[in-house]
Amino acid sequence: MAHSASSTQPAGRHAVSDDPSVGALVQSAMADVSTLIRSEIELAKSEIGRSAKKAGVSVGLFAAAGVLLAFAGIYLFVTIAEFLTWLGLPRWVSYLIVTVGLLLVAAIAGLIGFRMLKKIDKPERTMESLRELPDVMHREAPGTRRRALPVVSNGRVERRSPDTYLV
Image (cartoon, rainbow, N blue to C red; front, side, top):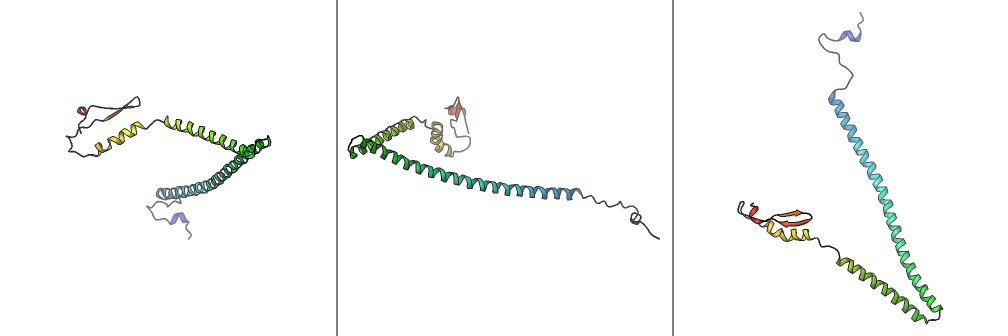
């Protein structure tokens, strides 16, 4: 007597399906997400590595260009001095004129830079906060300490009266 596979199940039990459980699905999804994140991190490392290599080569090329530009400037000034010699000036006078000209341009650039540096605003709020730091760090008993709190309004720091603030 031949029975089919479906008729061999015991009575009262449900048929076991081939569908995975919710826990197995969540575990599989977490593994897939973890693998995806690792893969993305590896891809980012690879791309950043290539980008860093390109940036390093670019910086090196800019440095080489700067050095060559400096040498070109030297040769330009030698050429100017030789041109002045060609015009009939003694060679030492020609080179002296070029040197004095370079010193004047350097002095003017330095003076302008110094004046611009003097015009830079000081970080007044930070300096005031740093001056108050020892007062803030000083410990007193709670409820007996009075300290004026700074208030910022319209970009200016103002202090409140110490009587209005009790710690």
